Length: 141
Image (cartoon, rainbow, N blue to C red; front, side, top):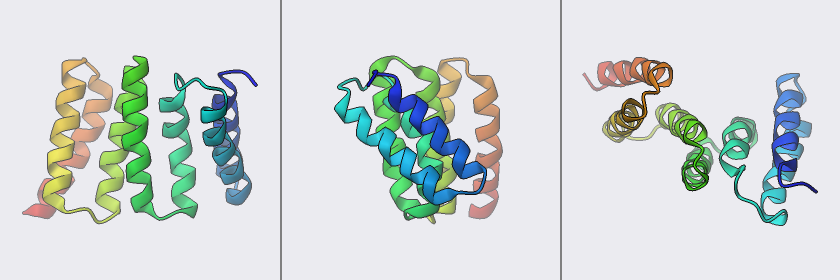
C-alpha cells in the first residue's frame, strides 16, 4: 500500500455513499482510516478525515463526528495542510449546530474558526462560515 492509498479509499467510499449505498461507502471510509495507521504516514490524515467523516455521520452518532474533525484539524495542521485544517474546522462548526452543542459554545467556535481563516486569507471558506455564525446569533437572540 502506498502512503496515499487512504485518500483513494476515502474518496471511493464517499462517492459510493453519495450514490446511495451508505453501508458500502462506510466500509471504504473505515478502511481508509485503518490504513492511515498501517501505512505509517499521517500526512494525508486531514484529508481522509475531512472527506470520510460526513459518511461516518450517517452511521455513527453525529457527536462522534465532532471528535473526528478535531483530530482531522490537528493532523492537517501538523502536516502543513492549511486548507484541510480549515475544512475540518468549518465542518466541525456546522456539525456542532446540528449535534445540539450549546449555542454559545458554537458561536465561540465559529468566531475562532473565522479568525483562523481571516489570518490565512481564506475568504471563501470564511464567508460560508459567517452565514452559519449569523444563524447561530439569531438563535441565541
